[in-house]
Length: 78
Image (cartoon, rainbow, N blue to C red):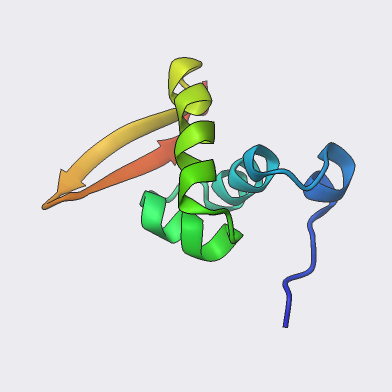
């Protein structure tokens, strides 16, 4: 069963960038991994890494901690 789209995704358009932003907004203030984002949004790995470059460039996401090989990220509230 497919998840119901949020109002944000319906309004902004169902693109990888919008799906990732929607997930980060809903997950806020909790940290998440890129793997969890891929799993929960259905965004392909390559698409996430392409989108991530923009999110990182504009400091929309912040790396909070590394646990082993996993990095945890959070939406930048500023």
